[in-house]
Image 1 (cartoon, rainbow, N blue to C red):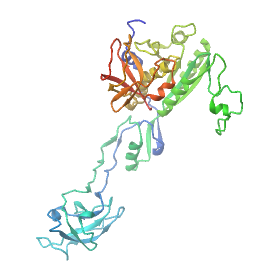
Image 2 (image 1 turned 90 degrees about the vertical axis):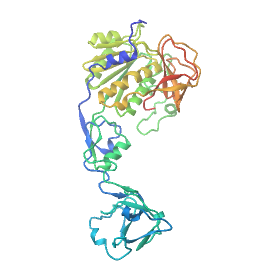
Image 3 (image 1 turned 45 degrees about the vertical axis):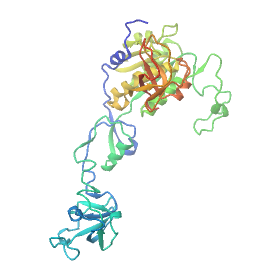
Image 4 (image 1 turned 180 degrees about the vertical axis):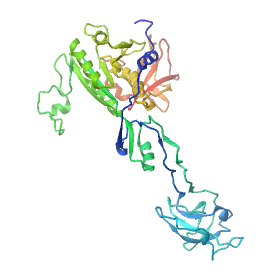
Length: 440
């Protein structure tokens, strides 16, 4: 390993150089926009709420008329009517409300409206008294506790003001964003087209899941597959199932992107043709295997053959030191290790920042934070290393017993990577850096 190899930060900077944001957009119904990236800034077409409304069941009042009210000295108000949520109150006229009834010190009648939560507060009334602080009167109500101006009262624009930016371009749409747009009456949105990813898994030993079974009654369409399909089948000697593709593709699909995969034997022409075909449609090409220095590690040679521009090759990180980042026909190519853990760890390092750049959405950037180590780790690494870990309530533990690059299953107990610096001993109680898994 060359001491001049870049750090992962340097490698990532080189890899992202020249990456252009996807410009193609489409309009989709609001309920189909979850997980999509907003392609334009959205400003509020009106204020929310668009009318003053009651925050609870009670009586709409003029705060200055009841501010002295107590249980010992209640204030009586004539009830002019009842307003339910959804009622129109534009016909109510405050000037005509003066008349017979309890009188204030200036001789005018004191009035109120019985009002329900969410109902519009009529003009001239600036607070709501809770039902619990009254005698529940119907034609006349006694107020036992005063209120201040705008108490229990939702003002126009309290949530959103007309004209303000409610969602900037590049927002990842989720339930809160969709609910906010729905409150504006917006039922279609402009989103960036989905990121397209093609995964090319190299290795003559790889077998497609479901491709080998002694029982040929496997049916994917109706889910009524054979027992062998449900419980798994031992592959032929020398073969292994292509687990990496399924892990990477599942992660990409979880992000709302498009993904597909193909297996190539360790043959130069076959891998080359797969990359050339992928470059016609995909925004990102991922490969697994063939990046080291073995007899069948063909990716460096193939990238040079097709004229790809290598952005980085080998980085100071374990696992996945031989990872390659390249560009071909303005498409990003990320060549990962064939070992499952090394592949997924370096996929997380490089793919998500690339996805953020291509979509213009920072929500895809990995979360890096500090936590307190609670599990001993005695080894001092000669190179920076990503260790499988689990963080809860600011404390990180190491539930995985094996840290081998070929081991995959123990990731199920983990939700982050412990990012260990090279040549540094860490102890229980130390503050350490972690990288959370995306869409875990």
